[in-house]
Image 1 (tube, rainbow, N blue to C red):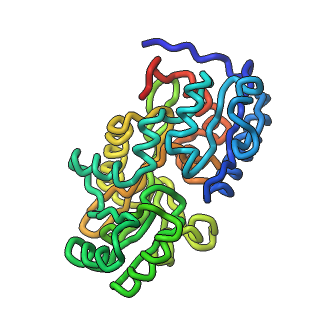
Image 2 (image 1 turned 45 degrees about the vertical axis):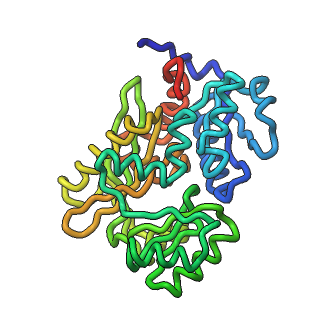
Length: 321
């Protein structure tokens, strides 16, 4: 199927960022960096915050939406469905892949069905009592375990519980903010990520990015404070490990029906184990973020990366679930 991609120099690009999710600060940074790169390249771009501007007004201001939104309401399929309804082209995946990527238990169930290694897990609904939850974890996972919301990102509200006392405390804190969360096997390993980007109609797999940190895990502080981490891109892990990650990331791209851009997160564990943690259908777009770092390692400058992403808004099939 051939598609016509317009000359992006002739279109108005609405960079959607901000929103109402807890990941708003990171989204604003993504949007500001992307918009700046577009304007400096001589293109027409405008920052638009869906928390302040109704989407119904977008068609009068923009020809295409560059999505730099993070978290609930931004990368879970909801805004994608609204843009589909208004007939506005947008970057990133459609409704289905976005929803799958945001809801971790659904994504992990798909991985398990396709025999892709992912940490064992159980889903905890807020209707389940604390004692019942502790019993489920005791008999199905053991300790330590990792606790995180079923939907969300940025390592917000996530952490390690080494015993029932810690898990009880984390469960009771989680109940106040989340209707559903998950408890999964804790895997000690090196955090890694693989980016994929469509360039001229072909999905390109970027070099693996890995991180060393003295924190207990790659948490919010380590992700936002360069002093808390050491990054390697391309990764310094053995080639067989990084090749497995890249191959698996490509499988996942097609498995969930992703489009345009994707980032897949892994852990490189003991004994050569490569386990998939989650997927991000709208990776952060800040100039120093993981996606931009991987692109630079593939000789793709940041301004070119952002422009490639804009063009993918026009390469979706006529119907994308």
